[in-house]
Length: 206
Image (cartoon, rainbow, N blue to C red; front, side, top):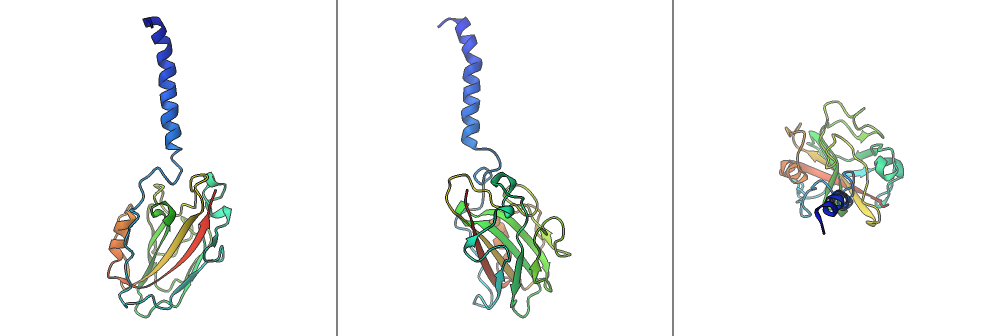
């Protein structure tokens, strides 16, 4: 092949290479681009030696039931409205709450991390993230790289994903954590401080 023909084909070859690379990435909004936590993240055990009577519910979905579309991210057809939560029977001695919402089907992809929730708080209203969170609480950065809530947005045709939200009753009034922290480090920071915890699981698929 002569030099003239090669010079004409070179731009086409570069364009094809870029297209293949981009297709392989699938876009930065999928739950497969940023590196989530390890699959073996160790949940802190309650210091009381048991789970206690603490319970958490949501008016948006039943435990192990589907999460309605409006709570998903825009890329999954939703409005990214943060889910409402309600918890009861916190143990005596609790001084604050923290919670995490992670996709356990995607290597513990973090959707919502909140710390320093006042002990008198028993609920988070729908759409509270970034707008009307309990005074004093702090929303951390999720795996999407955003502060606050990031709704479900699993890759298309990846099956049903489990989104587990866990409320932790802590024996400390607050945690001094950086804005951006890995899920593993978040759990490590809770070690020895959890009096009780309770979880609710919602599902979502595309």
